[in-house]
Length: 193
Length: 193
DNA sequence: TTGACAAACCTAAATGCTTTAGGTAAAAAC
DNA sequence: GTTTTTACCTAAAGCATTTAGGTTTGTCAA
Image 1 (cartoon, each protein chain N blue to C red):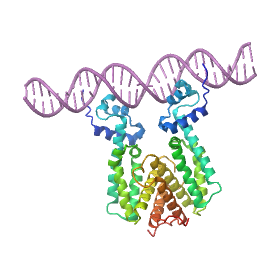
Image 2: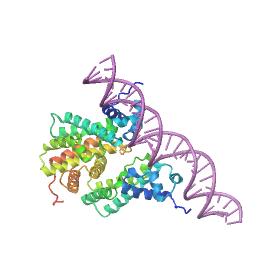
Image 3: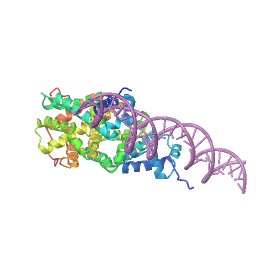
């Protein structure tokens, strides 16, 4: 009988597509085997186990996101770069909900460090550099930004905004305005609270 | 043989505890049955299915969080109230990671509206009222706040901050300072961008 | 007290996903 | 053209979900 031509790469790629179409939780060895019309056990020659498979999909997602972010911020600076970087996150989450979910799959330290996630963090720092914060405040700001990106897209995708006006994108842009504003006048330690 | 005394409430309560100890994904019908030393099928007299079980745990988590939030903001106003509300979220996530995960379990619209989640949103609005925003901007601010709370705690719990100084709590407080600052001077539509 | 009813729990069985062990056949390498 | 590697297989065990239908236990009324 003809061979399916399985490869680790093909499995990961098909898994990524499946994630976007049916949700990351639908990515199972069984589902992939059905897709390739192959016995489930055959997959285990190409991936160690489902954790391995999911990890690879997560890394793919992070690299993809990092690439898009890199393109988006190229040639931009200041608020322009900030908004571009932000929109890459939100657009990616909307276009690829499965990969976005995958990007939050828990990675072991080694994998995380080498992933596109680290690259994204570096890009955030680069974008923030224009605001002239101290190194410490830059770290705080990276965390604030990352939290907002993740939280907002998670809530929007989960339908958390769907039962109240206005459109999510309006709040998204307005919040970015606010974040830009606060980065420009980053408050000193609030002994004046 | 003696009866285990199963109840929907007991199952949900045990499930909540199990979630905190072993993770929300470890909450399965089988695991609960083992805990109560009962056949798995016996659970199905008390919960419809695992989705029902998880939904109930999610509602418990949201109600718990809403109660704690209510206590925390009582008698406070302005930034004081904001920080108190924020800390309830973060403290809850740290003390009850399983319940926190459960609180993000996808609820159907009906359940969501009647849940503690809606109550928390109302409390956020109340806290924001002190800043004197327009109704529309208040909605934007609610979404910004919610996104930050969710995103930050998710990242912190997931270990996203664990490989760089400083301590997460420093960034948390600093970000809250920043958010308080931006709420006080909420930027007009940025035609002056 | 007894008898009936509901609630609590059971066994059995089907279905689906994960993983390991060990085998066969096709493609690649020499 | 034989050897070796790689792709894929069968078989089987383990565990989770869910349904169907049966038995026991507690309760409440006649």
